[in-house]
Image (cartoon, rainbow, N blue to C red; front, side, top):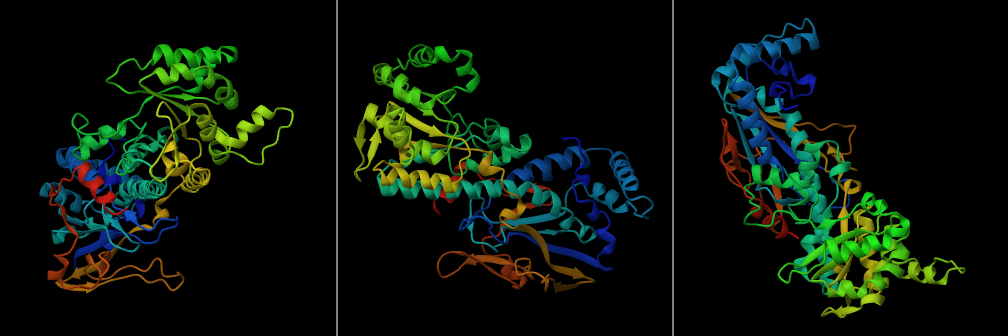
Length: 501
């Protein structure tokens, strides 16, 4: 994949658009906008452009186009197009001219990454800087949309989790510093390829610090000036999986728990708080909680660390909060545990303290995480269920996986790129689309665009502004003529997102 010519990273129908524009076309000015939210979020988070600029516009175009012999890249493109479209009379002088120029003659202006905006606010504009290459502006529509929509969507959903967790932390008096670890990215294995996982995982890390998507750290260090030596980019804890638990056989499960807690992760270092997460439903979750954990209570309390119980199947709300309708008369012991749920059952064993709002907080030696099929709706139901039972929100950590981050598309936020202004034979004109058959969602902006604050300090777009006004506002130059003009850090982006919770 890394050796695909950047010229080929388009929808095939764009190949001959250069000849389809009116004769004399010199400049095309376009924007990328999240037009309509199809999930219950109030704002979108802008994220992912800087990585696209560094990886694609600079690294890939230089390595695979400008730094290659002209005859090689042109013949390769010609072969692909001729085999694809047949005898289409497409010439390739424009590709030769671009190679001779030696850089991409485009300008991108954008909001600060981490900006939080309502629907229908442009997050970036793009135009060509050389009239010979007007065709380049919308040539980038396919790959730009492809590269931006996923990190934006994942960052937007992560922000909604952050809002939810912050709300319940405030209600129940939970420690706000722990929220950054309360939604943990479990999505890697369920994503459609490494790039998808990394882009989404980086979006998650704009709001949280817990992640099992390890390569997202490499991505953020390479593209967003993160440095895991001096800052917390992402972290996780020692954790088991079902193969580990199964290997000890059902009749050896207690010994597996004991060995993990007392030998493998004994928590003896007084300067290191040792956390181990143990998947606990391999055979019988309630036997683990009702029999094994009470027998190991002394060892758990003696550790300088936390043992985290991880259920991994069933109804997440009922497992964590309890199922008051569960009935098993022949086994009242199990019935009582199931009715209580994991958090209350652990409280009965270990007790704990109370927050300043009077909510129960489990002893710090024990905890719980649930990471199967978590959604925003289920997370809220769990938090509300715990609140109604008098438990603080921070008693549970959520593993947020592909059930959240992969059940989305480009249309989740309605992200689209449209042209709004052109110059033909020296004359600028506004352009727009407004299909009568649509409900208005697909109506495009028109003219030069400027994003400013409205009276509520919220982002607002002003359309059809004079050129001098287009140069002010929150859309600022990020890339021009092959050069990166702005280089944000992960820390800056996190700060912007969290300032708008």
